[in-house]
Image 1 (cartoon, one colour):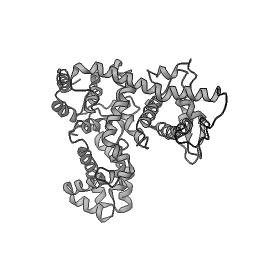
Image 2: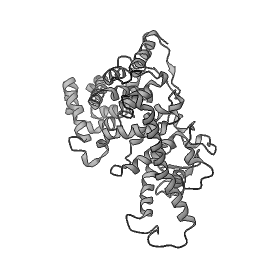
Image 3: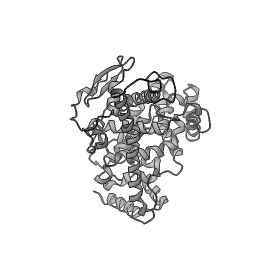
Image 4: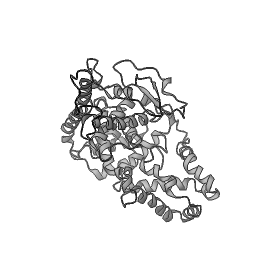
Length: 415
């Protein structure tokens, strides 16, 4: 470990060790990147996402309270409905209109159950393909949810609900975890989940934890429920907390991820609400801001894209909505989020990053026609940016294995 790196860790520890954390100082430190050592990133993210207060003395009691609250959510939204469904399916003495599956009443328990299933199936399909090039999300968690995986329990779990549901226009096959693998018959993935070994009873994969987080969020936020892409937001958060060097906090990664994700979504949820697209807080306005910012920074490139009628909607929608989580490899995403969460203007910084992504390939864009530029923006830009950021440093620092099946520079110099 270099002297500079040790000095940075000491700076973080000094700020975080104060009875009341100086938020301004913490933001300044985090904006330049947070060291992974000692769980510093996990702690800083929890503060920057308003999960932990600035007063250190309140941390222990708040975490205990929030984690107990999350356990209550599990009982109320997964376990109790699962018990009720099992009882209705096995021990009903008669069939009445009130509890019949065909009851048209929108307030009936069966109608709610079927609507929840529609949301669950979409979540299930999305989380299975979360970071498919990484083995992490397919591996078993060290801290499975015992409330749900207890072999003595006979209630219907999310896993069983997916198993028992028939999907239209889908191919359903049993996968490595004993749950159904949902895939389109028109597509075949080169990294099929069936290639992974079946997990033993009592285990659950990390993607199943992410599925549970998203399902509970959808239940608690019926106005937005679940929208495709939310899995890409919760993924980096969960990965960061689930790999926390602090085992005491790592054990509660699921609950902590849920509340941090909820707080983050409170800031960006308008991006996922279609009816707000054309409002001043909607995604269309933010995409136009990318171009207005580009015009200030590089008018020549801006005019070229305007001349070719390349609208920001063609590429910036995913960049902004998913906070660049699909544009970079995960180590880069996490590094960018350090700065994104630390910036007091928050998502103004995201606009600048998007403009930087365009200027990195400005020479190719200025030379290309509409077809080439669209291909460059939608396909090749991920590869180009990663090459520029993760090339070998000039001081011949050895690239390290980041534990995710890829090599990556630890920090992004000058970012």
